[in-house]
Length: 279
Image (cartoon, rainbow, N blue to C red; front, top):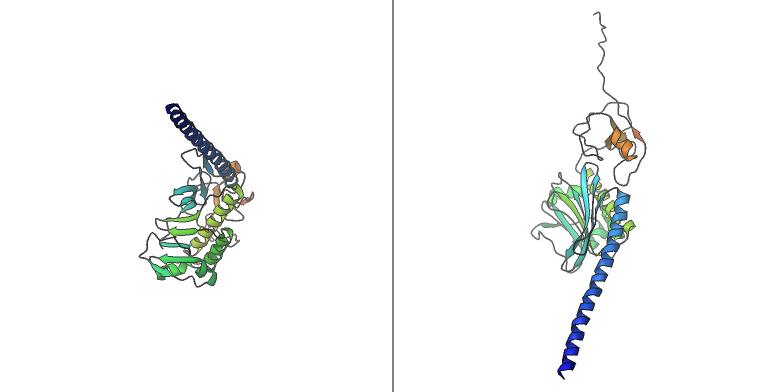
């Protein structure tokens, strides 16, 4: 009898140990697939890849114009979430929005609910803002259109977007395991950031002209250093670069641009005295 009990006890120990090994193998395999997808996405986006392991998840950081973005996986009580964060120092209007589904809550429940004024968005999302009147300026047609694209890309999934600490945060429940979908998620997020940025500046207009334009405190997206000489500009997105950085990178460093042709801005020169030297 005692021998039978000991056998059952030993079987239970070895069985439990084997089950733990099986779970560890599954975790390692999933981690490997995630690392592979994040690494491939980082190559496409020309970002910096940080490999994950058994106890940590992979992540990507990248430059985007004069700001920076990060893609990572968050481990939440309800499951994993994929998150994109974009630095937004000029983002003064704080807000939160999330899918209109049961179980999702606001971190700032005391803020005022705002309508999008757009039937499909009002049906799909709930929006709250710290300053409703000021935030209404951010709800441009471009912002609404980009939100619709995100919701189409993430059908039937819990979606969150907010700006609480001078950064734009986009989050979806679950993992994105395909590198092409990871790139698309980042692309849509950065394009939403661009649309929000456009609402902050009056009268933005790119004009092809020979007239000189004053550029001040411009940083190169490749090296991050101020551009004080040998400046070139992407012919598509107009992002300034150091000429040597452009030539080293081989193309525009702005994510999703990839233009290989640059132009040089006009150089301001002293105006000659019309009266001549002898006057």
